[in-house]
Length: 80
Image (cartoon, rainbow, N blue to C red; front, side, top):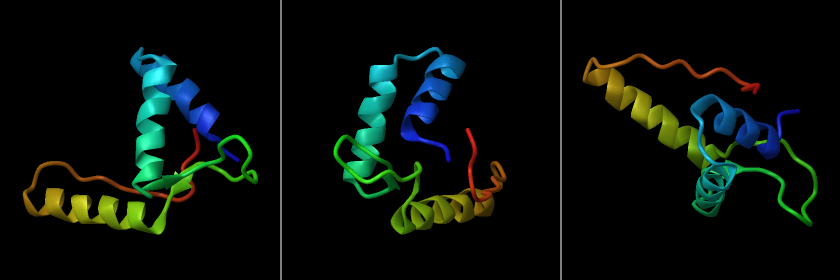
């Protein structure tokens, strides 16, 4: 089960950015109800996109494909 901590560690290492910056961004996405993950005091759950997050991603993929830029595939579950 991929966790937010696993994701933060991966992104921080791969892209050489601070963990605090990744956490900040992840928490902003959670506040906007685009992602969900366990924070202190919450019941354990994996990091994942919410239904709203999936709608946003899918709408952006359609937008990108219509403009013939890049083709993106989403698979579930995403493993880090």
